[in-house]
Length: 99
Image 1: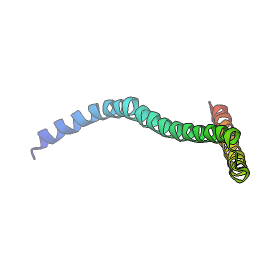
Image 2: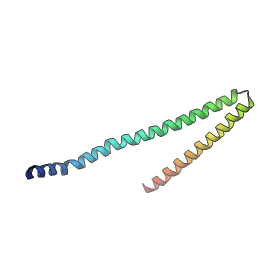
Image 3: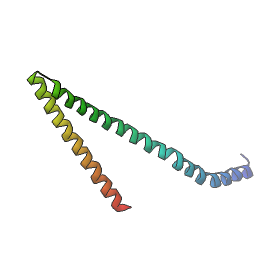
Image 4: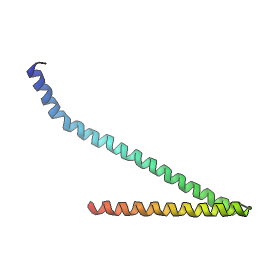
């Protein structure tokens, strides 16, 4: 490759790379963050939906064994939901301290 052509390419890359990096950070990174949030949110929504279904089954269930199973499952789900909520709140508090 010709030396002057190589220097021109290096100059172009030197000028372009910061803009390319900025473009990636401004477009791609927020999209990845949004996708991650949407996935987490969908899983949490599913957990809440399952808990709500269990709650409605508790009131309509006539079989005591099944009713108790729904109650225990709901208690476990609620405990899980509370642990996740506490973890998220603690993480948000710690990150906020840095800001």
